[in-house]
Amino acid sequence: MIKLSKDSMEFMSRPLANNSVGDYFMLSDGKRIAVLFTHNVPDSFKARMKFLADDLRNVFKKEGSYDYLYCRCNLPLGTISHEDRQGIILSSYPKEFYFKDGIAKGKVQEGKWFCSEKLRNKYLDKANRGNWYTSIIAIQQMAAVLSLLEEKDLVLYDLSYRTILFNPENGHIYVILWDSIGRDGADDVNISPTPDFIAPEIIINRGLLSNDQTVYSNRHALAVLNYMLLFHRHPLRGKRINDNDAARDEELTMGEKALFVEHPSDKSNSVDTRVLRDSEKPYGNPELRPYTLSGKYLRELFDRSFVDGLHNAVDRPTPFDWFIAAEKTLGLLMPCSNPECEEKWFIYNNELNPKCPFCGTEVRGSYPILNFYTRNNSGTFASDGLRMVVTEKKHLHYRHICNQPSQSIIQYDLDKQSYCDFKDENGKWYLVNNKLRNLIVIDGTERTKIPLDDIVELKDGMKLVLDCVSKDRLIIVQMLKPT
Image 1 (cartoon, rainbow, N blue to C red):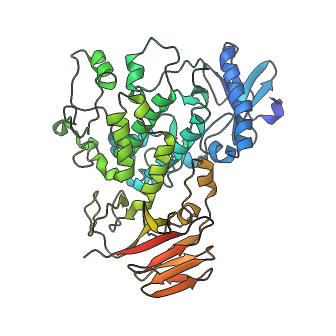
Image 2 (cartoon, rainbow, N blue to C red; image 1 turned 30 degrees about the horizontal axis):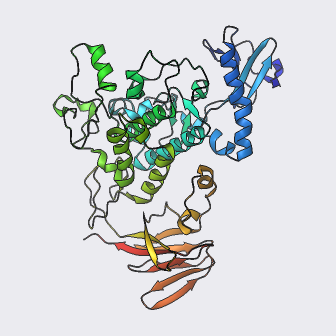
Image 3 (cartoon, rainbow, N blue to C red; image 1 turned 180 degrees about the vertical axis):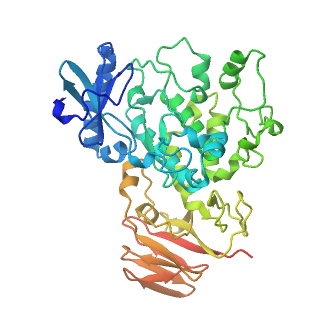
């Protein structure tokens, strides 16, 4: 436990804020905040904070996940003691999570600004809305945080757009749930979740369970958050009225009678597009922005969340499922040829003449599509079902070079070094070999070894053999040249 003197705090007599939990003071480094608990905070809360701030922090440090997690989640950094009061230390919100300009200048970038089409249209200019590339990065980072917490049987009791910060420029997220994280079934957490994110089984059983949130209800909240971040509408709020009493109707709509607005076979709760305001368009209309735009991998998880798993919690995808799906989807993102397109990117779905579904612009120029294969035990190459649309923004990392699936979020994070880069020179695409000592290019009957720091032009039908420790991996290049 850290003992704080008055000299180590800035404005010790003037807290930044206070609430029922405690008084908040900025520390002298300007990067951390001390929270001194009020005297009426229950011992159970103090014990939970001690576990999070000391025991859990040490576990994450020992496992090597501390740096990855704590820059994305505002978990307590340690316990403190000052005079006769106990408390914890938190990181202050990073500067990147405040709006720099526009109507919302200076406000914290809570997820709610980006999950509602009405709020986006009313308060955010195009530069502050983000795009599909940054939104899918955010989905991946949120999944990473939840995956690491779920491994420790930790539950987030109010996972919602209120407790996630989002940077629309780069897709970074920051989870601000420090006071509503608890051990599944072990901690008494008195937190009221945000209504839009409560799982149906929690609403149905409300009042019967003291600690009703679980990892499964977290998985529902994560799916809702992902859907709203991409489509800026709620997945369960459609046209169906389940009761004439407003309160009962809300309870049924989000609980016992919950139904996906884009359910593939039951259209009874689809969105009534006739009543949509202009401020709710175009994303308020699933006919214009269907969830199928999310591509194969994310769409499958939305189906598992809102069709298979909506009323059967064990069928819901895990955070790690979302992480891998987002990773694969990032590889399929294609830049829109229209510089004025708000979304900037869209997901390539194997079309010969793709066009942006958001602005209708046909793709101009050529793009290499990389198709990945791995040598199996019989010595032949089999498709991995993995593809990548080459852009200068993308790279080949270790996971692309060597197909060794990992269940470790941290391994993905450490895989930051680029083994190969791509560059476009006057419409010709080149692969730059940064780290592969045994890169073999097969072009027709020619077989060439590409030295380190050398480049090779990517051509249709070309094969790239990537030497790996255990198995060779093969890439077959497909040049997309829209007519």
